[in-house]
Length: 199
Image 1 (tube, rainbow, N blue to C red):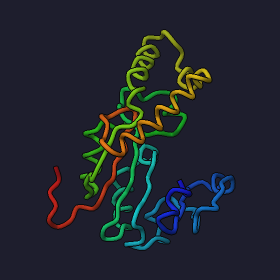
Image 2: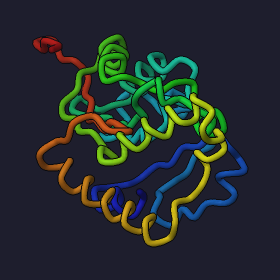
Image 3: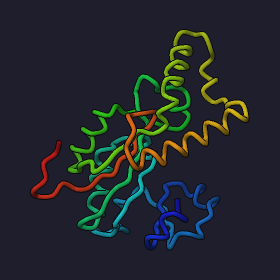
Image 4: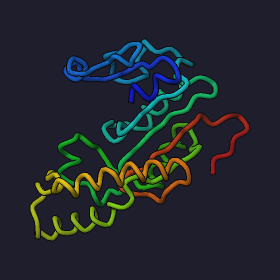
């Protein structure tokens, strides 16, 4: 993400894990900070034009509180780019292993955003094509047909390459026309202004 963002200005990285920071390569960052979140006192109000919060909210106990804190760190026209996993019925062993507290529905995500005083500027589904397969696999796990550990298996080589290429294509299309909710949802958020009406 650093190489993409640095084309638009200075990039600050934040991580709550000292071990992760030690292992990373930060050539594209102006600074990298060990902190529990961007609401850390090191970041005063109005610091950031863009906050990239990609696959983070599901790891946080109080997602609304984090969004409130991040919104305070935005400049007047600042935005938050956020991605979250969808569909609570798909919550499984891979979510637990990753430390997820939840999966969202499109409605529960929007409610969280609204409760934090933010609104959605644009959104798109992501990994849409794999949603039927994920639902089928989850039903098989719940029925005891396959082991829950199969969620961790990497697909057969050529198939995995094809899936990766499809994900790139979805990212290209979704950024232009928007896709229906998939395994994930990607959204751009902004603070609600004095004259704004939430949908």
